[in-house]
Image (cartoon, rainbow, N blue to C red; front, top):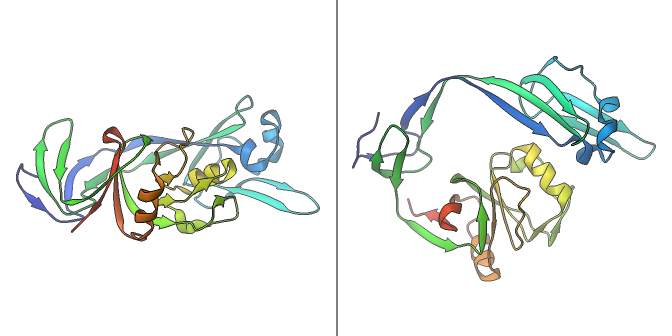
Length: 225
């Protein structure tokens, strides 16, 4: 739908893809803080049940607190894995248009990919993993970020924080955070970057700005446009 050399605006349609099945793994045992083999007793829905985004899937109550795990999407409870302590959700994704996340020039068009080029400020990472990710940068101001340091505001964003506790990383994943940037490297998060202190301090200044993570190049870019 686009041609090489074409200048496209943010939000312009690049291509369209057909509907497909999406699967989401929820780390129930970690979120509920129970043994993997015991997660079934805390489910509030039966396997095979259709659930809506935000519905409670599992719940654990005690005298002091109540922990609820809500569905991150609308789909079907497919299966549980009592060895891993996980719950699998599946959903039929509708046909979607692939849109450009930024204003850029089309550099290459093929059946496999569309390559975009743009101007921006580049920051090198010390270590990274995952695929190219674009999103708004949200900053969590706490040295050791725990489960209670943030809420739904991190959904669909790239989280920048000094250090993330394990339970915080699980929660970020469930809430739909696109990636994390920190002063340590976390290989249990799909898209993650470790940056030096100087880079970290510079990135804080770009709160709520769009960021492009390029793990294959071990860097991230703040677009100028």
